Structure formats: C-alpha cells, structure tokens
Amino acid sequence: MSIPAGGRRAADRRAAELREPLRVTDGVWAVPVPLHGSPLRSVTVFLVETSDGLVLIDAGYDHPSCWEPFTRAVAEIGHELAAVRLVLLTHNHPDHIGFADRIRALSGARVVMGRDDDFAHQRDVRGGGFLVQLRATLDRTGAPPDVIEEMYTGALGIARHTEDLRLDLAPERDSEHVVGDVTIRGLHTPGHTHGHAVYVDDARGVVFTGDTMMAEGPTQLAVPSLPGDDPAGDLLASLDRIRDLGAGIACPAHQTPYRDVRRRAEELAAFHRAELDAVARLLRTRESAWEIAPCLTWSKPWDELGTGGKRFALVHTLSLILGVTR
Image (tube, rainbow, N blue to C red):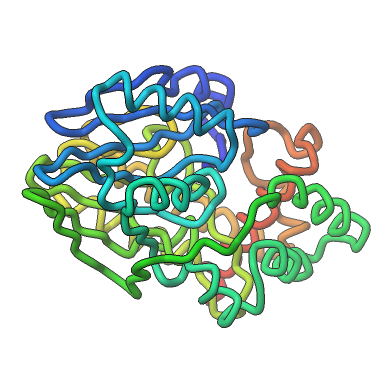
C-alpha cells in the first residue's frame, strides 16, 4: 500500500477509490474488491478479455467478504471465473494473492508471480517470511527494544495469512504471457517489494502498476531485510521503466485508473528523490531511522501516528537511508 503523505489525506484517497466495476478500455475491466479489516477501502482486481478466456491481475484477500462480492461483480459484467486462464500477481502482499489458489482450483488457471516474491524462494534467500524479515528490519532501525516489540506485535494482525502459495511460474526478471489473441508482458519493477512486477498490454496501451504507482501519493518502500537491499534505488529505476513504456492508461491496485502515465512516473520519482535529499541532509546530524523518521512528512505529525503508521514510516525511512548511504 502507499503512504498517504502530502496532497490529499488518506480518507480522501479512500473516498476516491472505485466502488463498482469499471470498463477501463475495450476488453479490460476493473473490479473493486472490499478489504475486510484493512484501513484501505478496497483492492482492484483487473480482468483482461482474450479470445481464449480471461487473464486476472491480482487476487484480493482470502476472505468471504472479498470473495463473495468479487464473484458477484464478475457475474454482473458477464463473465465466469471458470474462464480464467492465467492469474498474474503483481506482488506477494495478502491483499493481492488471497484467492489466487481458489481461482486455480476452480478454473485450472496458471498462477504467476515474480521469483523474488515467491514465498519458497524468500524462505531460502531471506531466511523466512514477512514477519522474520520485518523483525530483522526493525532491529536495524535504532528504535528502542520496547518500541520494536510493540511494532512487531502489532504486525502480527496484518500478517495473518498463509505464505504457502505455490506458483506455476516464478520469472526471475521479465516475462511474456500469451493467452489467445492477447500478449501481456511482465516487467520486474522492484521497490514496493523485491519481486514486484507490472504487467503491460501493449496492444491496448495499458500498464497494470500494482502498488508501484498509484494515481496519487507516494509508494511504500519494501522491507530491506538484507544488507544489500536498496528499495529506494530499485523504485526509481522501476519508475523510469514505466515512464518509458509509452502506455496510455495506468491501472493501479488502489485508487482509480488514470492517464498521462509518463507525467505521473516523473512526479512520483521527483517526490522520492526529494525524500532521499531530505534524509541525506538529516544524516549530517542524525544516525538512525528512529531519529530521522519524526523529521520527515507523513500523513499526520509523527506523534499522532499510531503504532502501525510509525512502523510503516520507520521501515520506509530505513530504506531511504540505505538509498543514501550505498
């Protein structure tokens, strides 16, 4: 998800999210799926029509309050989930992968996600799943032990999902997927997560940006659990890739689809470069993410952020520090 810093606040952005299915362009549908128990109002699942069935981009939470409205919406726009041939996941957060396995069992669809977000690969390379990585990251922020414990305990609630999704394909970098008369390219665009991918339908001029590039607001940087991680640098390179695609429409996983993709990529890159510049200045007199985070701009003043908000901000700040000091 994105950090709602600057511009309209989080509540305004949630109000601007899709509330009913939207025909984005010929053969592309946006289906908002409510997120049970999440501060975000919804996640958008995209359906791409082909001559041989459907391609699904992302897959909501694994919860009846998500699955049931989604299946109703798909039926309302005249499709059946049994026609899904391919599920393309932008990244491994629970609001994106939730019912992928259920759709595969129903339709026989193949499930694809970037290798660096594959849970089995992460366990091998990073020593564990989200909670293991988060704890290792919090321990590097310079926060007091009691604060780290409180933040970690609070994260247990958002990590109540299995990390055992089996992928049919886990591309290490870019990929190409052909279903019927449609070709969709997967581009490795790390930054929000290490294996994040955006998907491009060149014929329709559409890029499905996942959580990398919303219509408004910054991008939450990945958890930098290994010493060599540089989510900020990764994100800037990914935004450059998206900028140069020539796509006419961006379809993000939250908020609404939008045009002028190049301008938005440039705007977002400028914001995060400004964050890096601010952190570079602060590092002259401060050392840790814990000291620097309260000096940066968030959706609320630092003292008004809750435990979860401070946890997101602290991880984001550490990623910025790593981007400056590499």
